[in-house]
Every structure is written in C-alpha cells, then in structure tokens.
Length: 165
Picture (cartoon, rainbow, N blue to C red):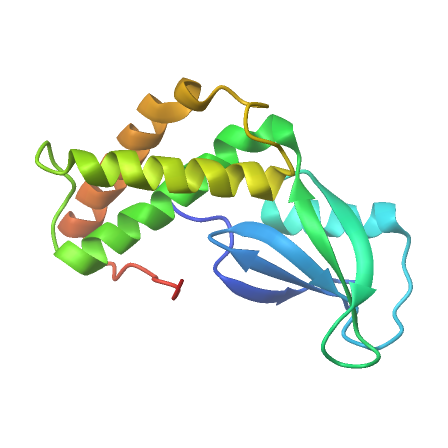
C-alpha cells in the first residue's frame, strides 16, 4: 500500500513551531508569533523527523500577523525523486476524484500534463532551477507510481484526500 508520510495542513513541532505540509511535503514554518527561539539546526531536525525529508530553511520574513515570522522550507535536491513520488500520489488522487476510474492507456495527456506540472513543482520545493535535474529521468517511475495509486484507490474503499489547488 502506498501512503503519504504526512497529511496536508499545519502540524505542530515539539518546539512549538508549526510547519505546513502540502502533499506530504513541508513548505513553510512559522513561529506562531510567540517569540519562540530555537537553533535552526534543531528546527530543521524536527521538520525532517516529521516529514521524513531532509530540509533547509529559507529567509525568515514577517507573516500576516504582526508578531509572526515564517520561513520557506526547501527539501534537499537529493530527495527530488521522493518529492516527485509524493506529487504523483496526489495527482493520482485528483484523477480518481475527477474521473472515478484508474488512469489507463486512453489518458496519455493526463500523464504528460501532470508530470510536467509536478516536475516544475518538485523543482520549486527543492529550490532547483530548470535544467538542474534531467526532466526525462523520472517520467517512467512517476507514471508507474501514479497509475498504481489510481488502481489502488479505485479498488479500495479509501476516499482520496483532495486539497483545493
């Protein structure tokens, strides 16, 4: 069975900071405006332990609330394939939610469009630029993962967790 490491949304870390996950991928961290202090290395360890992906933090910036600060979370480029795998699982859930069937040979446009969308998104999550990763190197694994997950979802009683885009 294929499953996400962490669901979508905000999760509280042991230090009191919150980290936001999208499709099981950490995207930002917040101090909640509580003036929390912790070394960056400990914060990175907590996010890595929860999301099962090695991360680094971007620059801290003011958030919506006056006292709150947020930093972007970047996944290590070495884990690009895992980020892409998690995005493939999400795309599979979207497909099943929309079409109530598994992806098949009659859906080649879905494979191509979703792969390109998720490839760009994975680059962004890892802080990589176009061309840093061979675009064609991951297509087969991505498509196989997505197809396998759509078949699993159709055959199971699981309802795919769909996050609005």
